[in-house]
Image (cartoon, rainbow, N blue to C red; front, side):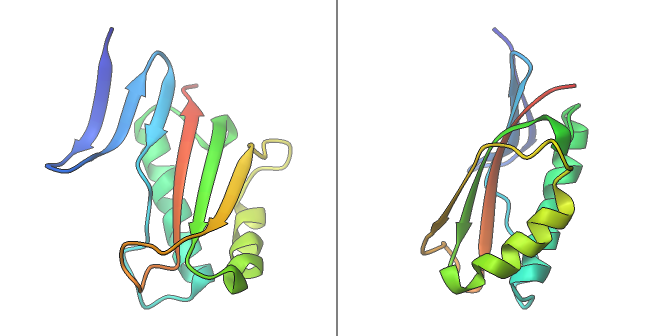
Length: 116
């Protein structure tokens, strides 16, 4: 049984790949000064990059969990999400309001995808 990990740190790996399935750690924005749309765009760009490194892409997402700090940001986050996710490839998804680890983070997204 082989497990491949990418961007391995002391606390977590950004990616784990096992048996053709790609697991991403929760992705957050680097620029915490951005509004919900800016942070969502940045997080989705991280997801695109990491999935590409793992031999996958957003058309292969099997499951998505979105955590937003304030449900008042739900519409703004969805506007960016809807423009990003490919038509016909919308994955099963859950979105919940959560107190995130840093009060300046507005959104954190966790993805599981199949390799191409």
